[in-house]
Length: 482
Image 1 (spheres, rainbow, N blue to C red):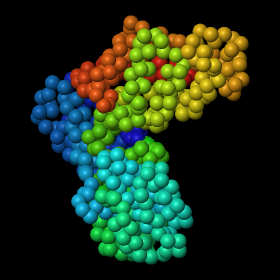
Image 2: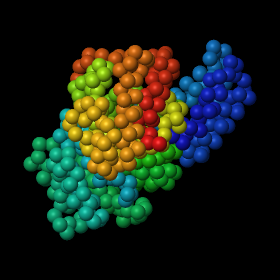
Image 3: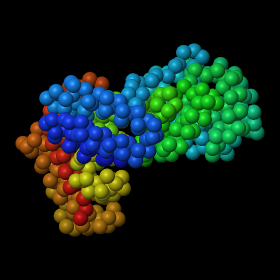
Image 4: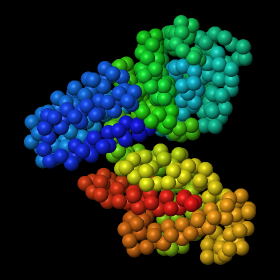
């Protein structure tokens, strides 16, 4: 997400940081490059123009000119303005009783999946959500919501077959809710390929009947400026209270997210970054601004990992790695934990400076299929071979290659790189020291991952970057099969 814009801005900010003195020409040249990068990222023209004007006004201030590090000051101004452009603070949901949430949007944006994702999120926060299927136009929409509700164990109302009146369906859903122990209701509604009069009329009737606290518009981030136009049309029709951006994991430009708040005046409240139901969360402008500038999102990384990783198992694996007892069973556990985190590139993108080092990682290292291939190789080993990799002589390796369906050279490469990684992680060098520090932190953490605040101090650009680079190089060696 935002990788296109981040790459474009990287060289500009690198030059700014290196300048000992700032002149009006330096600033003008940099802002010209930034403006072009914003437009190429599909940011709306008026939004980009006003944004550049605000940055220029602050960048030309005397406190910047006289600053010890004026380049850093300008980067900070840009970062703060990006955060403001994205909406400033987090916009919470209004869940006062009766808490009803209306989900609207065009076909294909992901309304039904978003309804289930939001229900799961609210359930994890301790609330008792109910789902109501009010998309009576799209074939199988009701069945889809029912299937998703079953996955997350949330009660769902499904209208009678043949029901065509959305208000009647909503009325029956409210009656049904009285028999449930719910605290809020989420209504999934019908969409169209484009905004039309029949869709608007239906949504107006439904909204007038339900009087929802929240009317959330689901938009596909990959549609760029078209998403902004769709948001404007829906807002005029049903007065949306917030926006949910979907498919941000596949949107390299991010212009729609940057333009939405300024053009529509409504906050982006949630973001979906994957197909899995747990790949969904609040849209946090400050963190997004940091990602755009390649500063990562340490807090987001810790929250993401804490919700998906078995801490006890992680501590056990780290301790075994440090002691030199790490074997293929531990490695298999770690691979499965990585799979639980979602697409590898998305997770690594939360590490500060990752955009600068990802070019040094073989493209195959970020391919999800590579983990599947390695898993097949390890599962083709006997129990004794996994515990004691030194048993893996040539004949055993040929048998493993045949059993896993992978080339012998790939099996040999995996075993070789496993030994190299094990030696590096358990050694006395910087990587070994970092592993010991991480393991110690995880053991001392109560109910979650270790406190990462130390990484956010002044040493983040040196220590953390070197650690990330070493880790990336190790990862690259492990996955590479040449």
